[in-house]
Length: 268
Ligand code: SAM
Image (cartoon, rainbow, N blue to C red; front, top):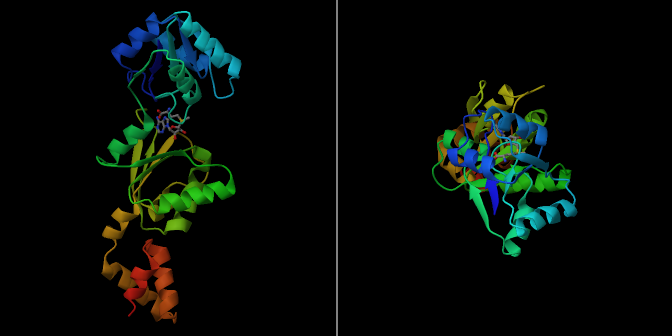
C-alpha cells in the first residue's frame, strides 16, 4: 500500500494519530527532503527508514518505489510540509501507482491552502491556484484568469516574490479588491491580514520573511461590494480635473476593478 501522509505546516502537533502510527509501521518513508522529515520523526521517536523522493527524482526512483510496493512493502509518501502533491511532488508517482492497480490511500491533515481558506471565512466554492508561473507571458495570462474569476482564488507565494505579486494584482485589478494574506500559519508569528489590495501593497513591501498564502476575492464579490455611489465619486473626481467621460469611466474602472461598461453607464 502507498500511504499519502499529510504532515504539519509549522506546528509539530498538527499531525493525526493515524499518520503517526502509519509512519511508524511502514517499511519506508519517501520524503521530499529527508533531513527535514527526520526532525519530525525524531520529535515523535519514529525510526522508520527514510528514502528521498523529490521533484527532481529520476524515473528510476519511481520505478524502484513501485517495485517495492509490488513486492508487498508499505511506503508512506510525505512532503516537507502539509499535504503531498498539493504544490508538492508526488502526482506522477500516485497516478502510476493507481494505473498499476496498486493500493493507495491518503491520510488527511494539514494543508496551508485549506487553513487560509477557513481563516478568510470562506465556506463555499474557491479556486486553488498554487504558485504563479515564473514565465512572464504565462504569469500575465494567469493574473488575467484570476482577475476574472467569479469565486475567490488561493495562491501560494514565496516571501521574496510577495510584494511584486501584490503589485501585479493591483495593476491588473485596481486597489479595491479584497484580499487575505495569511502568514506563518500555525507558527509563533502567525498573522492574518484582511483588507483591500491597495492596503496590502502598503503593508507588504520590501524584504519579507516567512511563508504566505493569499486568498483573493472573486470579481463577483467585488462587483457586489462597489456601490454606484463609490463609482460616481471616482468618476466625478476625474471629471473635475478635466478628463473626458470616456477617460473618467476607464480610470474609475481601473481604480475600482469594475467593468468599463458599468462605469461608463454612470457617466450618462
Ligand atoms: N503541500 C503544502 C500544503 O499542503 O500546503 C504546500 C507546499 S508549497 C511547496 C509551500 C507553500 O505553501 C509556501 O510557499 C506557502 O505559500 C505555503 N505554506 C506552507 N506552509 C505555510 C505556513 N505555515 N503559512 C503560510 N503559508 C504556508
